[in-house]
Image: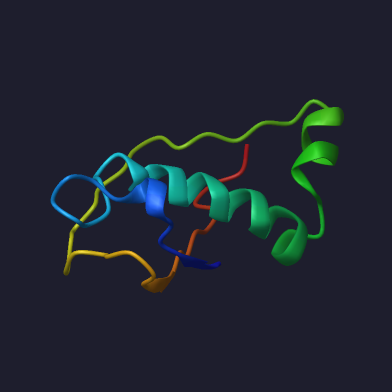
Length: 80
């Protein structure tokens, strides 16, 4: 999912606050449910399914700053 840093993502150091990265993952998942898997999140929830993030590891390569464009890639690791 392609995204862009918004003003409310920025902290006092003028880069994206660390708490926002997991928000980006969630936003990407909603986008990718319909676009990549053919089932919008609303339908997924309506039929009683759910997904969760079991762990997260963020390796920062460089600061993201206001207006930067970036890509979030997610995948399904297991399905039970």
